[in-house]
Image 1 (tube, rainbow, N blue to C red):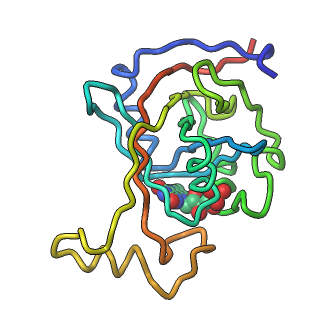
Image 2 (image 1 turned 90 degrees about the horizontal axis):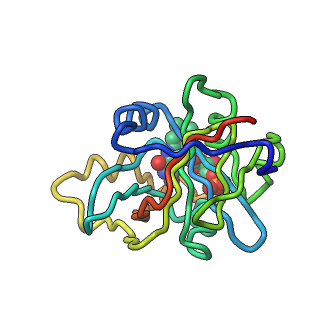
Length: 187
Ligand SMILES: Cc1cc2nc3c(=O)[nH]c(=O)nc-3n(C[C@H](O)[C@H](O)[C@H](O)COP(=O)(O)O)c2cc1C
């Protein structure tokens, strides 16, 4: 597939506002391990600096298929719309699970081989950040400060792990060093 597309490198500093604006609406994270590639929608994340490196931090509930793949291969791409928002794709990726099906295959997404990591980008969500996880941390109920409402609302213990929305699982924060940034364009 990679011959159909070219990558136009970008300076992420110039795209912070765009990335954060799209994040609020929903973007995608892609992971690959053991012969599987999977994408899911996220709207929680952070873009910034730590350890003198540019970092994208994704917050993934422990029961997601994405979490399983990130445990096996700690690398991911972040896939962001540019001109057009493919709302149907993002809705599908955010409501179905790779535990049950090959979402990218079913949607016929064009996966474009990574430059610096073994995880592809997605031509339909062309602004791509390639990330290597350098730190991860499971968030814990005990560490929320005086804010039981967040725990009650966002971690309902009666909703099983398989539910695609808010459920009983807490999030792992995956801190990914951004090692590549580009826009995928058709040739
Ligand atoms: C707009 C939107 C934003 C979402 N943000 C997150 C998120 O930041 N973290 C998370 O764990 N799940 C989030 N989800 C839920 C996952 O996308 C959903 O559970 C998905 O089916 C998981 O896919 P997977 O099991 O293939 O990894 C979001 C869903 C939507 C629709």
